[in-house]
Structures are given as structure tokens and as C-alpha cells.
Amino acid sequence: MTLKVRVHQGTARLRRAGIEVTDAGKARWRDRLAAPIPPEALAEGQRILDEAA
Image 1 (cartoon, rainbow, N blue to C red):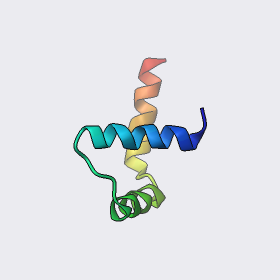
Image 2: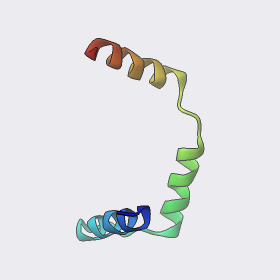
Image 3: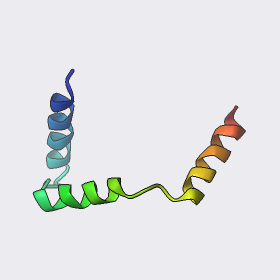
Image 4: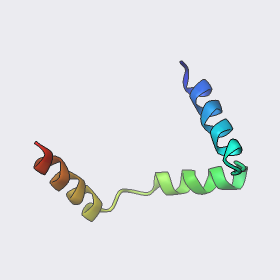
């Protein structure tokens, strides 16, 4: 399955749930995903992984 197919399926699921995907919404997500992950969040994730091991 290609990425394009997966994205289409995800968009279809959102629409069925009553959520419309817009270009403005996509731009907001791109901006958020471009921001670095805060060090506190990385440390917390590492702590959780260490506890699970």
C-alpha cells in the first residue's frame, strides 16, 4: 500500500467522522510537525521506554 493510498484512507475516515480536511488545517499541522520536540517530552518518552524494558 502506498503512502498516497494511506493518506486517502485516513482522509476518508475523518470525513466519515464529520471532520473536513482543509488546506488551512493541513498547513497548521505542517507547522506543528516542523517544530522541534521539546526536550521534556523526549525525556518523558525515554523514561517510559526505559520502564518498559
